[in-house]
Amino acid sequence: MSRASILFSKIPVQWHISSAPVLYPDAVLAMEDKVAGIASGESSERVWVLEHPPLYTAGTSANPADLIEPDRFPVFKTGRGGQYTYHGPGQLVGYFMLDLRKRGRDVRRFVVGLEQLVIDTLADFGIEADRRSGRVGVWVVLPDKSEAKIAAIGVRIRKWVSYHGISININPDLSHFDGIVPCGISDHGVTSLEALGIQASMQDVETALRRNFERAFGPTS
Image 1 (cartoon, rainbow, N blue to C red):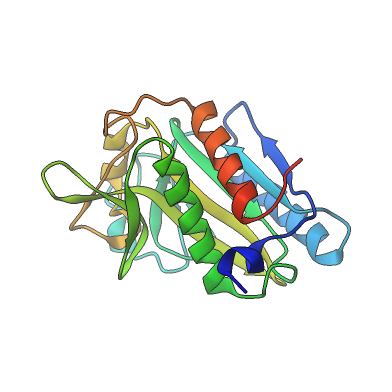
Image 2 (tube, rainbow, N blue to C red; image 1 turned 90 degrees about the vertical axis):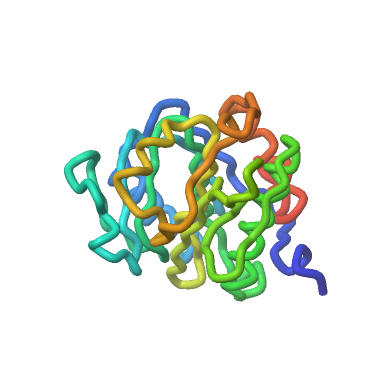
């Protein structure tokens, strides 16, 4: 059985888009409520695509020393895996509330599936991105041969239901990342579609993300 077929489900997933920025605590509460409903069998799976106002989040492995400017933006502790990351305007955030009981019960395979979803989505815009051993997220090689992170991934699993997810830098203010050591990695920078010369809207990237999700994970409604 292929990786794709293990993650694939024929039951449509709700695809929800928020047009206005969503406060982070509100998003977490909504996700937790949805996860509880999915776990109990009362709710269907959901993918939620949104933007946040500028903020930093601290994952379960966050090192306090990596928060360089604690007063720059609001800082939220979160139950997702990973370290510090930034969210803000111009960054597509995708939260995946999926029932892994129906998708193989394999957390590592699920994370690899999310990574591949981002890689395939970026490929639709002519960007060659990939994983890097020992480094979380999705990376690109810049013209000067250095490497930069273009997307972050951090998930949490509760009762075999996933939440949190991915963020893709479309055209955020990259200087906002200066207030943290993103994901604990100080030797490499961050980049975006815009910084790579790709002019794409949030809707453009969301459309590509949905198309690639349906190929790997199943239909949406």
